[in-house]
Image 1 (cartoon, chains in turn orange, purple):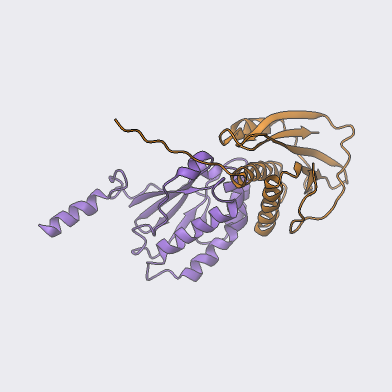
Image 2: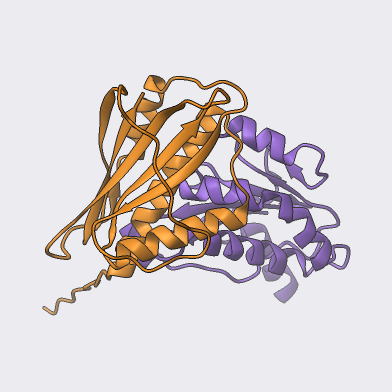
Length: 164
Length: 160
């Protein structure tokens, strides 16, 4: 009797593409949920490409979505920390369904609310198109709720936090 | 003629690449029609460029297909992500049935929380709809496993 096996090698590029996809997809859902007008296609492409590049070089610490209200206050804030693994083992999994259930906990925002994305870094990072240095809003006084692990990939994982 | 196509998304492709692949599949399929101009089709799809990326990124097209209705062609397009995307055997060839189409509509699924955004995006665009498409043509829906049994029967009759 002969047997065959198939081995799939997952690369860091696969991990980066997958995690950036799930993070940006979660941001897309949150923007739609809150009724915040999203940016155009070009901006989505730039942002996903940048986040993927920073995950691939392991410089990305966290992606942050800030919702800026017409009165100037910034809330809610969503944080997506990325954790890197020493080995490239594991599969691609996500908790989009759990995240969708968590939408019920997200407060509404007034009309005219806009958004900004920030990234923080754990090491030096390569400049990416459409991204420049910025300053995050203060999170003082905001209550943090963890939404747990958002996605797992062979070389890294991403989780989600909600600050309101 | 009911057909299905699965497109590999992340980690094989970024959302932009997935949408471009879907656009090319739609274009190659309807390009066979003498009544539909490729440039017109491309222009008609442009309004979806943003929301399509969002639907792909959020994984909504994995369970809720884009549906192209063009004459007798009913084409459902879904995406596949994760490890399955890397092993997916894709068929990106033009989908049979497009040649006879004289008009077409792409139905975009109203998936929460993006339903309102989808409705707003397609509003006013002749070839885009957020409505559920009407049932596929029954005459060809008897096909199973991707084989059009009616076409096989016609071929058998002609060959006899």
